[in-house]
Length: 380
Image (cartoon, rainbow, N blue to C red; front, top):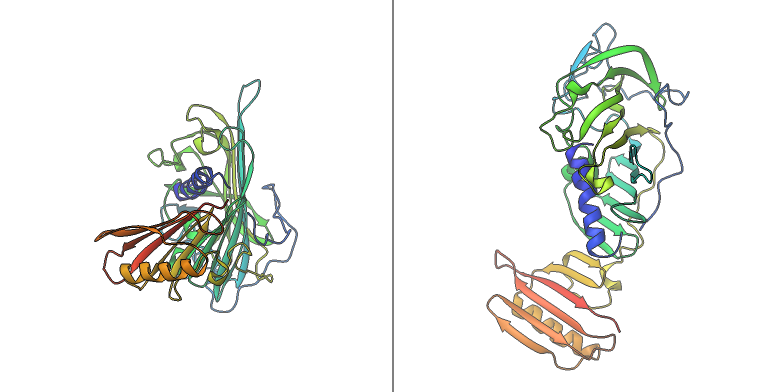
């Protein structure tokens, strides 16, 4: 429902359609949070470690600076604050789910669509993975699965019917930041309602969201026409969101494929299974560079291997890279290439390699310190 949520999903879907591929690596554990909003699991709440910013008795619900949502537990909270969507950093690990569905109203054969995310994260050292499943009559016509994983400073994206996209990324740009960046759909002041509830094993304050909290100028808020129920559940210890629930009516092109179709929309974000063991590994589909079908220089970085296209950057100059491939492709059994060369790039075209035609495009980096390479393979 937030713009970065929709942008992230749309980007993945469009990339999938463009490559005729939408794969799951390791799926998250089969632990699912409760789907209702009436109390959650009756499990013992995980206690935060000392000094983690938990609320103190008699403080009126205020949390320590930087530890979570400011004034959590107060009668009203500001939905515009910068750390509204901060992840539960006081816990060493946590699981995440997002459920987003649309069903057209008043239609004989209603259009429907859904996206479901299951994820898990460890905070130190940082690693996160998410499996995104999409189903949409209008957009996809069938189901698709995308796995996005970040380990240290490398991210991996894998599609159901394609290869792996990988490259460097900073922790400040982790996958959940792309999904839950600050600002967006919610705005204004939210009012606390009672009784308090336990959600996903965590004691929470409950805040009601109304149409006044939907930003009509925000891309995600434009399609919201009516709210049936909307709640924000905030952890008493740590001041982070445990659940965001929005049920209402409106339009959502990303699920319906049409900006005019009005439907019932359900959005639910959950954090759960705090401090439980997690295992996060690079997807099996993301082969190491030594397993690629064609050779690449030892210093290759930002390697992408997707749907028969390999791309990377290297510290070698454009001409040295061309020399590297003329030598290595000959060793593979390819004959002399057709070569086009200029100051702006080199194109090597091989028509009779053992595994089929190959074209290699080499261009200098903007800073002139190295070059960028794209290999287009056409297996026979």
